[in-house]
Amino acid sequence: RSGGGSTPAQGFMFHWDGCAWTQSSVANVPALTAVWGSGHADVWTVGDGGATFHWNGSAWSPVTSGATTTLVSVSGTASNDVWALGATSAFHWNGSAWSAAAGSPGNALGDIWAVAPNDVWVAGGLEDVPGGGVTSSVFHFDGASWTSTQPAANPEFGWFGIWAGGVHVGARAHDVDETVRAACGRLHRRPRAADEVVDSLALADRPRAGRV
Image 1 (cartoon, rainbow, N blue to C red):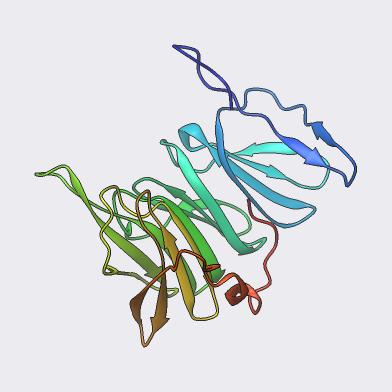
Image 2 (image 1 turned 180 degrees about the horizontal axis):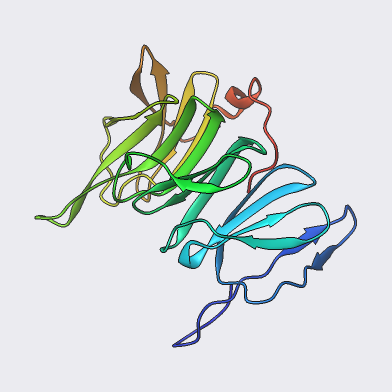
């Protein structure tokens, strides 16, 4: 990502072949925010203005997402099950087209992590317009609808990062770093100890393609 002042930020794609990085030649790329892939011939990157680009193993190509604002995160489980997240809405790729997901989980969203088609997690919050604050929430999609829960901590600017594996969900904020455990449909806070690696092994039973 580059740019400054009134100059629009520009994005770049780079590929690692096992020995070195090479820049891909792609025209008119806006600033990019996230990348995810299910394999070497199925990679997505998202960014400013609702941009989505797809790598098919030999070239990048732009794909219309339907989003008009910045997409901040992308995650998926297969080539026909990919999610992209904007600050106020989520979008789903079914293998042939993007569409807006029914029922936005919030209006101050930060990150998305897909475990299965019926197990998708979003970190973010609900902006309280009168006070200008954010009620931090973790949202879950069960394949049919979104539900939300508020962990014990309520960071001022909402949750901005999330990962999920097994029955564990981890969420991060600017001033809080904790793990919450999903059990019986509810999230329970377990604060992170200063010398603890936060459930890094909890993902062992959820092998997933590369996500940065």
